Image 1 (cartoon, rainbow, N blue to C red):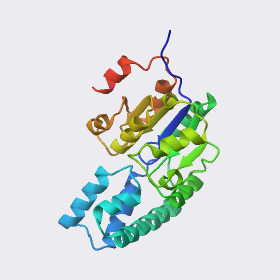
Image 2: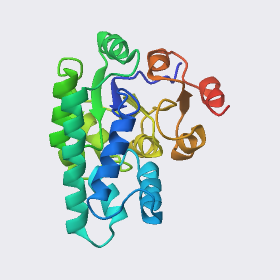
Image 3: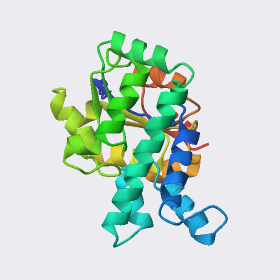
Image 4: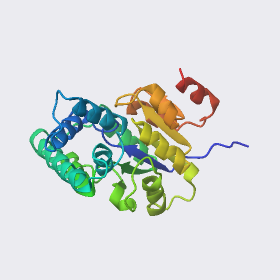
Length: 242
């Protein structure tokens, strides 16, 4: 008897996975910390941006709390600047899906699989992103940390929130895809059967595997064949480590 668990819910990351806005996010972080006196060309700036890179996928406010420990007012001020900067860029430049991302969403949803977008953006920024993309009819749910009680990645809360909201009876029916170590940790801690790391984002293959990736993909285009496969066993897991 087959022990394959069919995937009924896919949780997808935004930046670096389904949309190509990594440079926009980096600029918004740089502008935000500059307003708090951490400017390019300084050691403090270099350290802050290393922290930003390491923390990709985590709630933005948590990233700023890591840069300004013990100073909640400064972290909140930087976070507000980040949101204004990023949303301003969205309005001016728009947002482009990753190549093939729309086709992936349509293909998965066409098989009856539920789709949930998972992000470290605030609810306000997430709403703006969805409006710019026009994806309201492409997905079943979009989740920010606020929607899941305030804890974002690497905690499993947002995925578990999607499981409850969309009526999925078993976490093993969940597949996760993202480009950061925190995405992988989130999926692993939630008990997802597939935790796919994609190489179109910020973190290396080694970082993704360290976070608990079960598979490594070149891009989101490779995701449907994995999710819809009847064989999710050792062959794919072994190949992911190459």
